[in-house]
Amino acid sequence: MIERHIISADGHNVEPPHIWDRYLDRRFAAKAPRLVKDPEGGDAWEFSPGGTPMPIGLVTNAGRWGRRYEENNWFGSTYDSIRQGAFDGRARLDEQDIDGVSAEVIYPSQRTMGAFMAQEDDAFHVAGVEAYNRWLAEEFCAADPARLIGLEQMPATDIRVSVAHLNDARRAGRRGVIISGWPSGGEALSAADDAFWAAAQDLNMPVHIHVGLAQAGRRKPPPPTAQDPGGKIPLQKISGAVAGASDFVSKMILSEMFDRFPALTVVLAETGAGWIPHFLEFLDDHWWRNRVWSGSQLKAPPSEYFRRNFYVTFIREPFAVLNRHSIGVDNMMWSNDYPHHRHDWPYSRRVIEDSFIGVPNSEKRQMIHGNASRLYNISLPDS
Image (tube, rainbow, N blue to C red; front, side, top):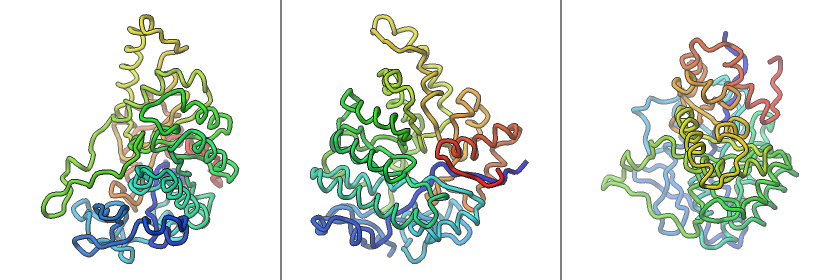
């Protein structure tokens, strides 16, 4: 049975050319990111003066009907040549319609947010985050807030600032926030972060982590991206790792924070999902063998916290779907990562059908729209 509705629980945007001129505090105009050209004449963002420009080729969709993997290119894409839905909310709705997507949860460009969050100047850090959040709400998602569910980026300078921004996000009606570092600004999870978890729980605000927490404790510009003499980025520099999230997830669970904040919800985006059954098996065994001498006060096996407090998104993972009961059918949310280069637009529905062969309709429905609809309070007509 083909479902009428699908919700992508992890989509992205890219900042439009005018965002910093219009939304960034004018005190920082001289340090604002600027648009430059890449080696093949495409558009790229120079996030800091003299820094390595970051092209837009792999984070946008340049094809009229998608593109073959062989056509992916880091360089050569311009804002005029890409599909406009990467940065224009109204165009994004048209692109959703072509792909048959009913709604989408929108994550910011983490390379952009990271460029601000890595700065030594905390005021500049916060100003960049706030500029993105204003543009997201006032322009991109304003095209249709019912279908474009924007996540508000949280700064990571100190706990007071993080909690204030979390409260502001709830007052503004946001349905989730994203963190890229620990809320207290520290290098590691600590009791200093508890005020943020408490506020998120009390406000019923899901906290999202996309891939990882690359900005934890950082206060300096990131190093330049390693490129070969031809300007290409070697494959080993473009990630490809899986299960990296197991490090911070295990620390969160074993720290007993979910006993202190039992209603806190954490969403893992683009971390992969197929690794989770082994991870939970391993974590339960690790806890069982070491809980006494280590003084652990966990009230339940670690796997129970994962299934109670976490959601995980997945893109094209037939293996994860096959092992859905070991992950949790109610914990999984399909996504297409549009318009990043892992997307299969406009064939998302075909990918779903290929990945869900033999899955009962009730379980399929949960993973492709039911869980996301419940978490984000998305109304789907006649669903």
